[in-house]
Length: 518
Image (cartoon, rainbow, N blue to C red; front, side, top):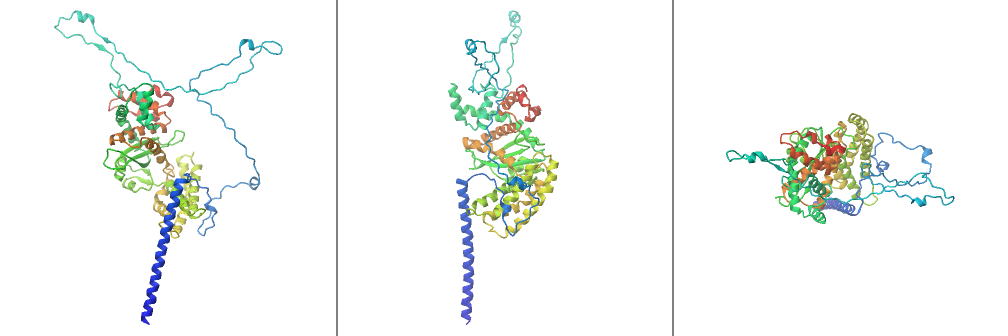
């Protein structure tokens, strides 16, 4: 009898073990299926993160009431069927500052006679049409002639008892590359072609050959390095100004450096203000790149140098080593839930859509406040966004015990809960953004350029790229043409001494239309 009980107990224990094993295998299978669907979507699906906002339509037990009633159309308007009206495309006028050449197509004098009565015709109007002509770039040689002058009288009276009179000659204007053949405009053309338009030096070498000019990529690379070194004091000034701002955004991306001990190095980006001069922002628009051979948090600590204000970043733990007040990024959170939705079985919608719906409501508030002052933004966020965040947090806690932790949805929920104290911080200050897209957009030009030139040869070259990207992207963010701005800098910087003030050369100190007169 005892043996039978032991056998039954052993059998029940075995059944429990098998059930647990089946549950683990099912969980593992679901995880692998999600990875497969996500990989398929990344390869073949749309890359847009747009969400249709249908999450609030699901009738789940844990669904919450709307915080505020959505504005709806009147019944009479909903029943109106409007026919589709195609918008006619309108051509934008050509810039008024472009040089213009007028060509008049007039009738011959003998044709200005009426075919009916033979009287002279008079002009009743005219038609005008503009076409855009492209003039290829021109290259010219500037030959500098410096006459020498000496005193003939002193030469006649020279008896050898005293020194010969000195020869007078105009001094050479200081240049960014002394005794070189490159002018500021040529250097600016090479640098903007490589760092703004992602044209590698070997392709520029071929373009110059079309003009019969032999400029080796080695020579151009040497020029680029010297220009980047000349910009170091200017970049240091930008960094000083950046670290005085109340809000800084940061991000990082990989870069391959051949002559470096580590296989993967990093380009860090730090920025403040807006990435476009059209956006009204109270902080100066600055973008700075910093090359480092690792992703250690110490890299950020060294660059920020004791910065204690707001630092808006993603969830990377390296930023926790700084003294800054970390602010989270809702774009990263939304991306996690979007991946969970993409990894789900076809047509299956549920909790991921519900989370995306919450986030969409937060972004809708930001759209309504984009033209508000920081004080007004903070007040609206406290009144409208805070209740949504409170509801969302309750939903996250409840959902966290209903999903598998290792599923894509479980990972998204846990990421959100772990980052929650940083994610909600944006409602405390109107200067903060809801996401870190400012830094992500700032790092994109470097990523696009990396696809073309692929790698840096040396650490010195990578740091030179960081300096040049910094100046170019900061100029763009302030509405300046990088070519004109670099030409001005390469003309003015050689005239300055190391201790001279450079604030008059900052991008926001320059009027775009008057940059040539600086």
